[in-house]
Length: 177
Length: 255
Image (tube, rainbow over all chains, first blue to last red; front, side, top):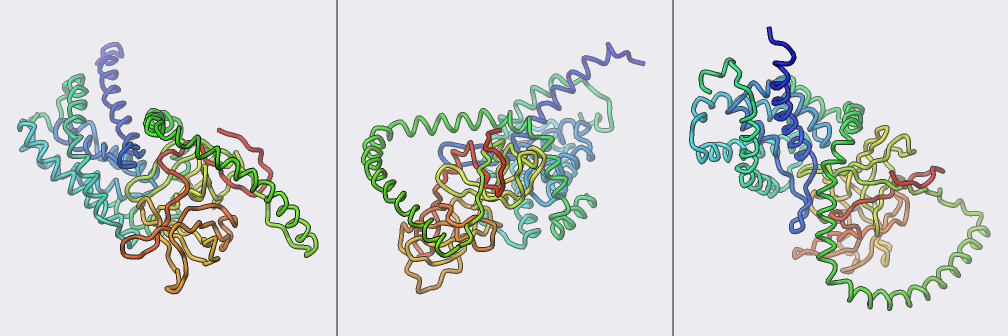
């Protein structure tokens, strides 16, 4: 039985990781204005889900992913359930591939993100159009995917640092850790 | 995932069912969204200021000349206003309802690729009601679609679901301004033989009763295919303070 004093550093470390995820969630919710091309949307949540689905899926249990998706839809004015479906699907696919992805050089992980990110963003566009029965141009999909792919190395670096503060936890995924 | 699909289908058929949850969530996230948006809003304004600085000298000269012209127009407007009131009294005309301006700070640009909207820091407590028109600086920017206790969501006129009845000022031609999720909305339902000219000023027609009549909107432009689009008077990238037009007597204030 661990005392609270023993647990406190662990809680503090977990708090750092979840706080970072919360900030990235908020950044995903707002449109970031740029001086050149108006506003851009950076899909930070997809990056976070991809990263933790590979390196620590226990941090993002399906219930949390579902709640994040619903919150995102409610804040963004999207049909409720759309994002949670995409996020859960992304988590499921990446967790099923983590045996391959864990331990691979970063380039391979990045290529994996290109495919997963492009797939998730395209699915967003497709489902959003389906719920409204009207599809906009494909340009936003290309721009958002490009921004996501370009920013992924930086975001994964930040997540990597937060990963280092996490305590080691023996769980169902530990065999491939 | 099954629950998500169910919610998605339900939300598509009954979007209004989640309005309460949306405004509740927005009210909860009001503070963190405001904090996270602040540095981005300030950086954008700073960059705009730097870009605009070169223009200041040229603008000063132009504005001095414009000021002289406006003084003449002001006198003319006073005369016309007095004449207008006299004629209305003569006809016993029912005057349009008066609108009060509720000034509001933009909390966050919560819009994205698929939905163009902003969150503002006023809500039911400030007297804001659904469908109120929202203007910023020089012209119309949208209407309130969701109202929480302390926050409201404004659907921008360039959102794909936005439709604004407008009238072209010089020809009196009525049309609908439809959002496309791109920067400039398009004009639809315009007869082929209309004589709308490039640069014509458009204002709200007041049809439908959502938007008050006479709000400045933008200017007409033609694309290479001859289709009409609208360059809006308001610059969405510089939005910081907006005004919600509300029928009633609420005092003007900024939150």
